[in-house]
Amino acid sequence: MNSTLMDDVARSIDSTLHAVSRRNELHMAWVRVYLMVPICLLELLFLAIEPEVPLSGRLPSFVYLGLCLVLLWGLRAGHYARWLAVVVPIADGLFLYSRFTATFDGLTHQRLLQGQELSIVGLISALVILTGAFRLRRIAVWSTSAIGMLLYLLFAIRIGLTFAQLAVHLTLIASMSAMAFGVTHQVRNAMRSEVARQTLTRFLPSAVVDGAHDDPMGLLTRPRAVEATVLVSDIRGFTAWAADKSPLEVLRFLNLVQGTLARIVRAHHGTVDKFMGDGMLAVFGAPEDLADHAEHALAAAKAMQRALDRLRGEMDEVDVRLGIGLHSGELVVGCLGSGVRLEFTVLGDTVNTSSRLETLTKELGVSVLISAATRERLRDAGGLVSLGAHAVRGHPEPIEVWTVE
Image 1 (tube, rainbow, N blue to C red):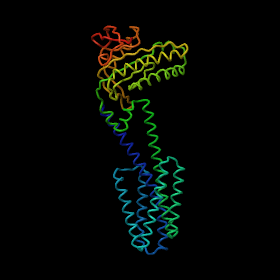
Image 2: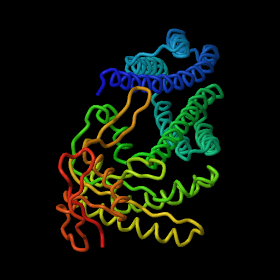
Image 3: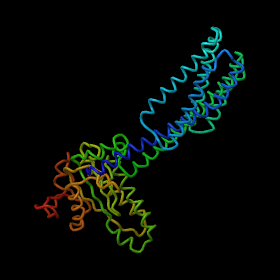
Image 4: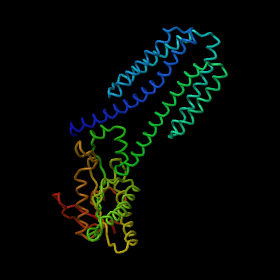
């Protein structure tokens, strides 16, 4: 694999993770600022109504607000470093410790017990708010936020908190609502990512899509040799039929026929590697290992013939046939291309021979040709008829081929 391509992919992965981490940190920075601005305003109010907490005990709030503003400015400017994920939580913890220490030092034992009970109510209210984040709708977050705030407010009034204290606590709970909106956004992104993954499995083998998701570098750097059976098919008579048809009619026809054939391949545990207009390349045994791959490939070929016969009977004025070549052997599974575009594919003489056998079906006047290599891997070769040895382009010696009775 080209080292430049590997470097490009590695940089792409790092930049994506960097961007997502920065975006999440920026969201939390906004929440901190929205939380600390009203708290600092209330700190000024508390100086007048709660003199038991001195100014030195309230200074951490103003210092922390300054740090939050600096962090927000830096993140908005595009600055982000991995160490922030450790340093910022440490700063959060130091601020909370210093500020609450000053408050607790000025409270009586009874007030601390009441505060403990109210803290449990606050925690439950926060959990109620967070449940709305996982319902994937903003109206759910709004409703759970209202319920959580009301729940806390009812108990806070019973304990006898002052208006200023209520304002601070409700501001803290409101910050949970802001975080809940962020969680909702992340969950919706995760859901869209899964939908995109499911969509990609219609274009690529599921094993490839999962590999690209779990270990993209491994997918690029670990091409592997496997033994498999390759099936190459071609629709006979398609070119003549499509000559006087509109492109839209041709596309509809191909979607119907190739879609039917692809479903048969999948039902027999094969993978469609690519469509080539009216042709198709399918693999049994790659990229996912498959025992008895030759058996599955032959069964799929027979089912494809039956399906096309049925479709031909249902479509007026359409006289098409199917040519199929089957060959088994070693091939390489990996990525082909450059940093501009990549294609996950199978390569090797096994693929080329299958294609040559499909072409040979025209000369021999049969629908299916099976190489001796594939026949040898069948548990039951009954129903196959030998057509003798024939020259195949790219092979120095003739290859014995077989067809289905």
